[in-house]
Length: 189
Image (cartoon, rainbow, N blue to C red; front, side, top):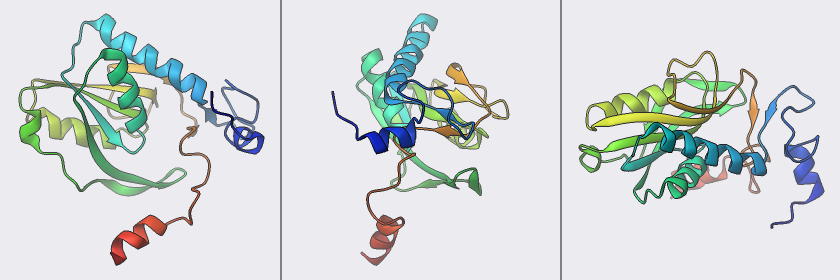
C-alpha cells in the first residue's frame, strides 16, 4: 500500500477515505472507491453479455478506468483517443477536439468497442468518440464512472450518477510542475 501524505489525502478527500462529498459540495472519488467503481463497471459489462474486443480510453480522464476495466474483463487490446474539451473547473472549449496522435480507424474495423471515460458530463466528448467509432466498428458502447443528467450520451454502463463537480484522485491535486509547462515545452521543441 502506498502511503499518502496527510496534506495530500485531505486535499482530495477532506472527510477521510471513502467520503462521497467534500465541504464544497463536490462529489469525491477516492482511490479506494475508484477500484470499487471500475470493478463494478466491469461486472456490469460481463453480466450484460457484451464481450468487447477493444477497450478505448478517452484521454486523459478515461485512461485509468480503461486500464482497470481491461484487466477485469481480460481484454488486451487497449486503445486511446486524446480529446481536449475541459480547460478548468466547469470551463470548456466550445466543442471537443481530437488531438494527435489520431487513432487509425483501420485498427477498429469490425471490432466491438467499449469506450471508457471518467465522466459523461455534457456528453459531447463521448458523442464525438462514439460517432467516430460508429462508422468503423461492429458495435460501440460506453462505460463511465459517473454520468450527469445533462449528458447527451446515455451510457450503457454507469457506476454512479451525480450533477456535482467531481474531484477525481488523479486530477484534483495540482501538477508537480508549473502549470502549462508541458504545453510550452512541446511548442518550443
